[in-house]
Image (spheres, rainbow, N blue to C red):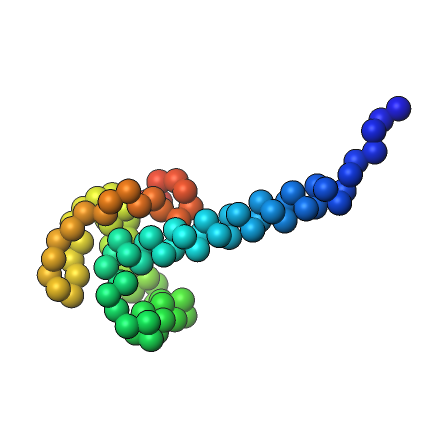
Length: 101
């Protein structure tokens, strides 16, 4: 005779895993903000820039952003408003794998 499944414990384990993944994503996003130097920006400015990026419908602009992001993750020097060139330190893409090309 088969042992009945404990759906409650399985659901709890899945909910715990989802919570851990969400917390990791938030940490990774914070690390990305810091690695790009965006932590020096005013919170309102950063939020506005992210809102613009999230609602962008111009594929050419989005492709330019994607290329700059891929270059950042591949360790190529980035250009910033201050003109400083710095390589990322230990930051992985948010999906946990290699940046898509």
